[in-house]
Amino acid sequence: SQGMTKAMIADFDHKPDDPIGVRPSARLLAEQARLQAAGWTYHAHLHNHPFVSDNPYGDIGPIVPSAPDIGGYKRDSPDAAWITNGVEVFEVKRAEYQQME
Image (cartoon, rainbow, N blue to C red; front, side, top):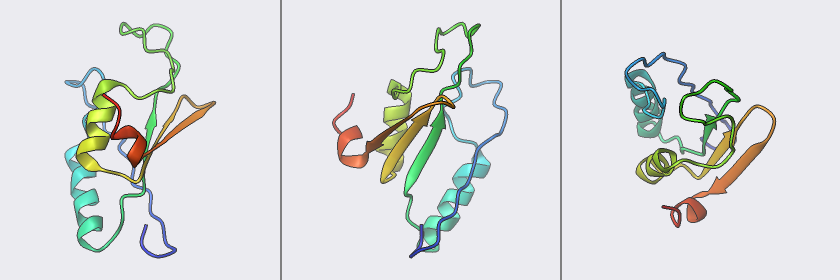
């Protein structure tokens, strides 16, 4: 966000070498850096944990942050993290995710 203006950047890049899908793409990182250099605030990270019944990891839509998610939030420091499965949303603020492991 910048003042009253908000922008959403999305990362829909297919990452075949990243089976869990938690690493941001180079394109997303470049756009995030550009916006922050221009004075924008990283307000929220929206992350999808979709329902996938045949996922070999057994991750079928829990709306809680995984360990890699928490590490990313601590590294990138958004004001909040929103995790959704497409039906429900779990919101965790910076002060809260900083306490998670």
